[in-house]
Length: 286
Image (cartoon, helix red, strand yellow):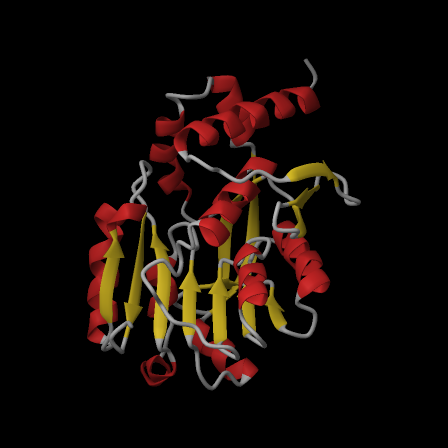
């Protein structure tokens, strides 16, 4: 069996697994994209986009964002014209959701991995041209560079904290063979520029942030630590996925509460890899 057929078989196996795990899991029609190695996806709602990852990973992200509304499930309100900073934008699924559900949102999409950023730019060129400000950079607690592991077939898992993928891989070993895992986790080491959220705010003249969304595969606390004291007042709401929650959720809750936020952990979102979603807000939710 050649590599392409092995990949097709692995995608079919993964898709069947999610069908069992998540009733009503939404799949997309797939075809090769113009760029080699990318896939064009068309979802039942009519959304067409590209991904540089496994099509199943892209479908998982679509289901999390557009079907289960995980970043907004706890009722965070967003009005037309809202300003959203999307940290860990990946190929733009959250931005695409916002563009379909809000009138005239102002979106800043941050994605550090160059190939994934290219897919993000392609998708935003189709749907969000002039509405989405794109930034090919990592965010952290200081200026500098980040060493990252870029997973070629699970690009949404790319991380500057590869140690968090060890328990994830161990869990997946219950469902996949070692050869399948080796293909899934094929990776390259990359180095990307890093800035802080406060530097991004200053550079782009961001006067308010109605929602700060963070999904960065283990860098959540560093990103929050890169917000200067005077800039916290600009942020109304935060939605984030906390990785290795047993270790990282407590410090993140403490930091957000010290800045005047109420933190709500979405226990229904806690997954078998140890991640959980949380939201933070200043005003009572409706």
